[in-house]
Image (cartoon, rainbow, N blue to C red; front, side, top):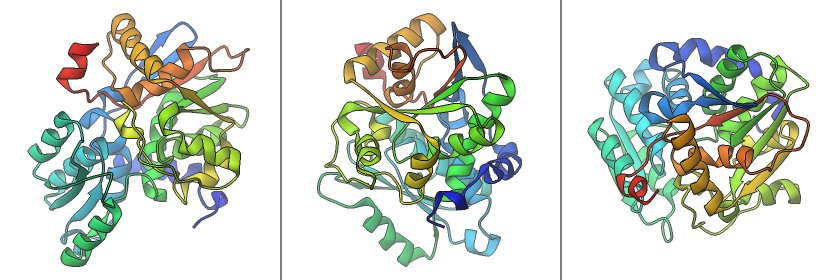
Length: 311
């Protein structure tokens, strides 16, 4: 299951049926030629519940009773905790010690056990592996799994159904699960649609990887977009990106913050820095000319109060 050809829009359509009881069909807000899919208003405040629900609801009941384990800087952690709470199973979440406080507290409130680590000196996957050995539970990774990718792609499925005739999609890129799922279903529904990724300049592992033609690993990045601090694209997600995504655009820290401000003031929508990366690419002239209707996926809206004050 390492080739792009193994993953298709059919996975996304199956996911849409499976996760329907646990998610919201989020609204779309228009601003000129841009149509913003408001996953900041999703349950848990981000698109991540789509993938987490699809993965966890696919685990056999007997195995599920041993619990689930995830690693995340916040949004996937919350999503996993929400689904685990709904099903009455234990969730253990490995979170960096510098994760936004709001995301940590929201995850803990859902009953999850949080294991903190130092992202500069410790490996979150190794920590999760030890917990899995102890509990016999099931890993729910943030992006590098076909069921996670498929669940995430249901956001694009809804957007294209709600706004026919889109010329392009712009999706933020971390590990690549979101854009992989979105690209697979978008290109199936409309082979002519153009799919673009948006990534912080300071966390440009996917941008580098696309240009090198192989997965590049970068040092732990320092960006305000905490949900996009991945070190390299996923083994499963990268071939899909190579095959279906036309270009990855980079945005600066200043552009991310300004995009947050504009979306807040113009659309009355609060998005987190990671969620504003796609908006920054759209609003600051990164896209090619000639696009008349562009879908922009706002991936999340979980923002610390201190950052809101600074805005």
